[in-house]
Length: 86
Image 1 (cartoon, rainbow, N blue to C red):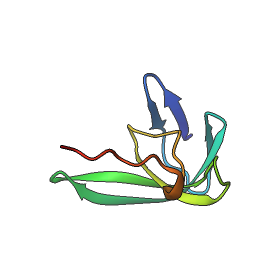
Image 2: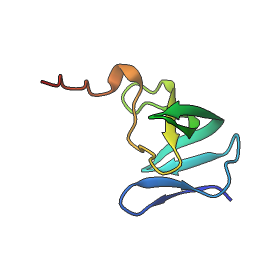
Image 3: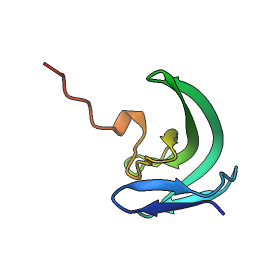
């Protein structure tokens, strides 16, 4: 059984179940895909979720790893802009 668990941050537990909707902080996330990608010279499993932006209500794609799930993601238009690094 797949579920989200929060200790100090959200993480995914159990086997991935395509099409299953999980709720974190009152927001639904539906698993629509899993892919492996190279990240910092190692292969990382990414989970692809359909999510709903709380600001505009539009559906967007949200990506996470098993150990780090950001339960406050918004669509790209409503995400905070990254500050410039000096």
